[in-house]
Amino acid sequence: MGESAGIRPRRAALEILEQVRDGLPFEAALSVGIDQLTEPDRRLAHELAAGVLRQRSLLDAQLARLVNRNWTHVEAQLQDILRLGAYQITTLERVPAHAAVDTSVELAKQSGGARAAGFVNAVLRRLSQAGPDVLPVPQDPAERLASEYSHPLWLVRKWIKAFGQEPAAALLQWNNFRPRLVAQPARQSLIDLAAAWNRAGLEFEPAAYGAGLIVDRSRPAELPGYGEGNFVIQDPAQALLVQFVDPPPDATIYDACAAPGGKSIALGRRAARVVSGDISPLRVRRLRDNVRRAGTGREHVIVADARQPPVRPLDIVLLDAPCSGTGTIARHPDARWRITPKALRHIVDLQAELLDSAAAIVNPGGLLVYSTCSVEREENVAQVQQFLTEHRDFHREPARDFPSELCSPEGDLLILPQLHGMDGAYGARLRRTG
Image (cartoon, rainbow, N blue to C red):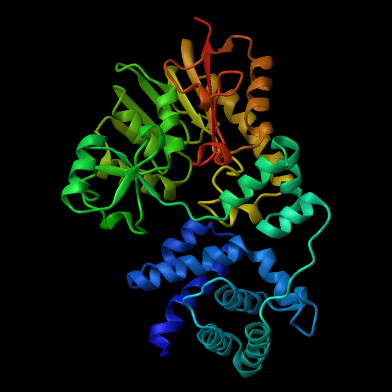
């Protein structure tokens, strides 16, 4: 296999892993890392990088047995090269073992010279010849699940306590599958979008609850109607959140943390106007591009800090708050390693601050909708309960005509991946006393 055929996507995957290690979110690293590749190479680079992140602890356990020194002392880039090789050997049947070894050795030679190449060659050849070891199965259920599904142990323990052992295992399993793209109608209706895709011979299927069309593609821009703004890419859970908001046609809505813009665009199809704010100029640029491509013209984009919202009191405020993202780990394979107990405590404090700020710009009789893409109680129902304790002029208001199986006992939106087969999401409708 020549370098052009084999090294390029693996080098891209290695660069993606390096950027994730340096703190860049996987999605951002991916968009940069595979931009110049051909479509087959894009798919391979994506699969390799995401697969290593999803199976990192399993790969490390296998590799640690094959190195002659402490695995934690192996240089970080060499660890990633070995993980990439091991992932191909143990998981990707379509990649011959010798190709996985040879390309990994070439990567090591490029980054660390002959000595690094020799080290990688020795480790991966032992793995390819002997096959992966049968690792001992921990007796503790949480340790077994953390090992089997490659998640942090503290998070597995937390989910077992919250959901029970079997539902937690189902959530872990869900997180290790790559989700497919889901398109939500924008400038075309769902019926018209489906008809256009049928005419184009595109294979797709409806998402649950009529929340979009599922398509097996990796590049949205190549789908018919993308350039015309006929659809946006958005998980069904987020589309259902917009349905949960249920704004009247004459409403003006402030979307306080709006980027990348899918919810603002969907709200713009239902309401009179949407003011879409985000604190990051870079994210606002993406938000503005999406609104320009697929919006109605009723969306108005601003750079704004949700802690100090620059708007007068309105009848509807949507606070889709920054969160741990534990409901979207399947979509963001690095998120499981990013979140820590300390980071979770910090984000809970920030959410409370943002809720206070959002409440101040809700008119009497108006609606505040608080939402996250987390499955953690402290970010969701506990956060809302604390808010209602401190803000006696707000109360919960159930959504009209909304599927009861997507609601918590309190009447909040509650979507769990292991139950509903989509990203996790939470939402609460909080009505201010008139």
